[in-house]
Length: 396
Image (cartoon, rainbow, N blue to C red):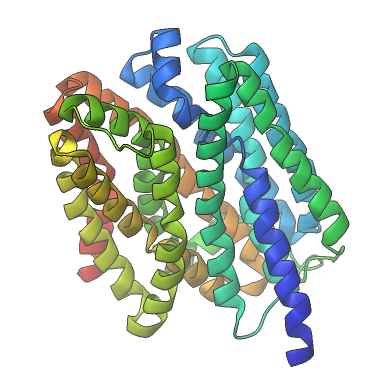
């Protein structure tokens, strides 16, 4: 076993780097949302619809792409999906002109992520195992936050130096680099249960598994909150700065969001370690209730000095991400070996389906209550509703 650790460590690092590179276009739209809302004259609902379309594309594609990894090598799905993610980002740069075209290419990019994120996790767990697998899963899932931060930062820097369409096009290079890295560095390997699994037949049965179902619903509540928050984070920071009249002297709104997203990495990894000690169910419920409190405090702090509003937003984001790795590691622990791809498919389907709806509900709440301080407070409250319901149900 010790002789295998260096090889496993290299593979984990490679998969994490490929995940980050494959996500360079992921947060481009949220990063440029204030600019695009003005350019295309978008309402809150329209802006949320375009942002949510990314997760709608993910939701449609993930049952096919993630479920297929029970029958074919996940490496093949990864390579094709990196190309798809790049094509979606280029398409947005060239063809997007408003709500419908913007949503179309966001959905295409989301389908690309559907074939890289969870299939990447499947490729990793097919090749590494043992007692360290839960920790490897935590490292991989936490790299999602690094990818989000890099995407936000790159989008902000490129849009400052280039027209926004050129910035989008440049971000399409990341998935192509990930494609090359996976093609050269990940060995081919047949999935362990390729002979036993019938196409798509295991989706209903795996959801019926009581432990799998609990983690799937928890992940749906988690994604509702996380992706709703990420979709509107830059816009909220810009609003809070204009309302309070104070701005961070070192960071603009996009850079501030990128830095905040970096805090998701230690929060997710440490959250997984704490969950292993206190119990996953207990830890996840505690995190969701704490996030519910912080969602209200963050919205109410919009008019506060910049340092207080950013501190609360950071604390809220860390709390939201603190159960991410615990949920995914828990699913991988309880899912039957021959149905892990199907479990990840339904897990992602409901999770990113919630991620599709949350930005729209947030935007519609702003439209209904007014885009003032009270409106943003109620919009933030919509994010934590699912987590609170899950936590109280788990308590019962």
